[in-house]
Length: 208
Image (cartoon, rainbow, N blue to C red; front, side, top):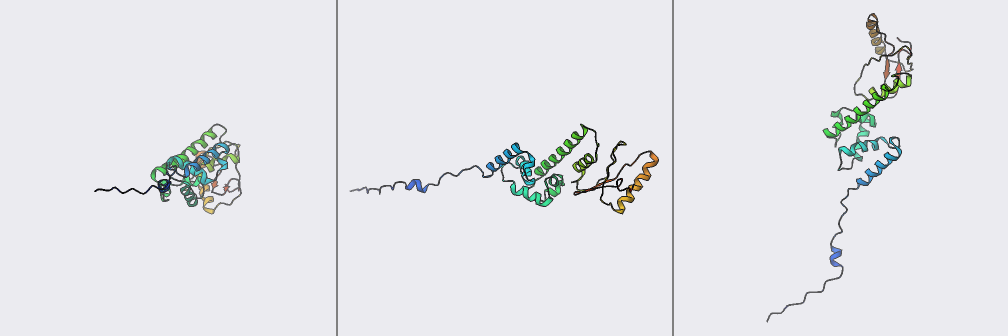
């Protein structure tokens, strides 16, 4: 004779307790991105630290990863937002997480900044004051990875002056350039030495 044994009654709530709750698949950094975008929209770039502005830039290059550590690593390596976007692509890619595409996007930001600076200056007298001259030179040269010598064509009303002392080599090079250009009727009005933290004018120091 066959006999069917009764199954033990199910314990209430056992199945529900054993099954894990569905995890939230939204990455934790999505909320951070929206908050950062909102701060930028409401208060502007001046309300953001350099690494936060860099995060905003990296959002489009790296859409599916937390980019705050990378932004901080880049600022730590190069010093500032301006120096990050001005760095050579090869140096940028030395930082783990920076691909060729990310480096290209950062260089696009630099190119846009330079184009904007040139456009703003083109809309008004080019170099009408000492502060305008320094603003222009800092925008175009201050964060370059190599030394540059530029010729600026000025009118008779712009005579910048400065205080820092240039090197002997700077003075000799400038005087040689003056002596070469003078017979051609080209006047060297000044030699402005621009560094990251300051500037110097040889004309203002009466060295040319």
